Image (cartoon, rainbow, N blue to C red; front, side, top):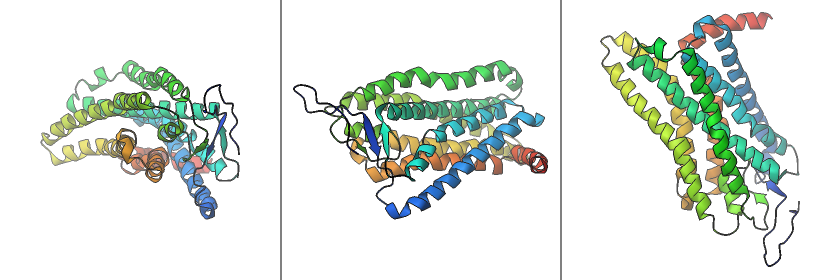
Amino acid sequence: MESKGQYPPGGNHTTLMDFILLGFSDVPDLQEFLFGVFLIIYVIILMGNSLIIIITQIDPSLRTPMYFFLGNFSSLEICYVSVTVPRLLTDLCRQSRSISFLACATQMYFFLVFGATECFILTAMAYDRYVAICNPLLYPLIMNSRLCIQLAAGCWITGIPVHIGFTYLIFSQPFCGSNQLNHFFCDIPPILKLACGDTFTIEILVYTVAVLVVTIPFMLILGSYVKIISTILKLPSAAGRAKAFSTCSSHLVVVALFFGSGIISYLRPKSSHSTGMDKFLSLFYSIVTPMFNPIIYCLRNKDVLVALKKFLPKWIVI
């Protein structure tokens, strides 16, 4: 498909009206296999997170700040994967993989907003665990319903204005003649590769936003867990230590998977970027990690397992 555009006087840049997402077109024999794999993963993500949302709403024993944030996190995961996976599944079934300039900008915007929200919610969940373990007597007073709602609302809203401006700046760049995007969705690195001229300012902005949205929350989570682990190790009984660790382990695994892949993807030097590695990391933090999250929270959390056992028989009967 040819790119549509016009050549401005005195210039040789094309004003692109669409991009072509190459995705996994380099492995034509695997299109049906990949479609099946990604469809199964998407269904697992939708069902797993929907189950968590339902049981945190209907089970009285899960109406606590910890599970309030978990319900928010599961809702976010559904939104996060739905930005990229339906489009990926559609592209695997058709020859034409063009995406309009506006649709590409919209996809990037929502992907970045939901990604930032995930960083913030994971930070709020770490704060909740910090208060619960380090200040247990004050926990009901500090983590009251008003603060929980304010924290959740702040997590959902904070990234919106930042990424409106950020996405606008990226897509206001002039683009060269090629409209082939060697990726399966509109992510920052492949889009910048098609931009003409000096993108140094945008790249500095990418690192700045990544530090604000990814690195700072990660450092806050790390600081929380240093204090949490220090407090747990001081507990007198082995049973108490085991129980405290069990309430944090699921969250800690999810944090390691999500932030690890995100930091490697957006904060590593440009010289180390390669198309294959970018696709692999993007697959990992945008699809694979969200698939593991409900599994991790369900299998490693006794309260969630008990609630599921109570809920599933009723649901199956219905």
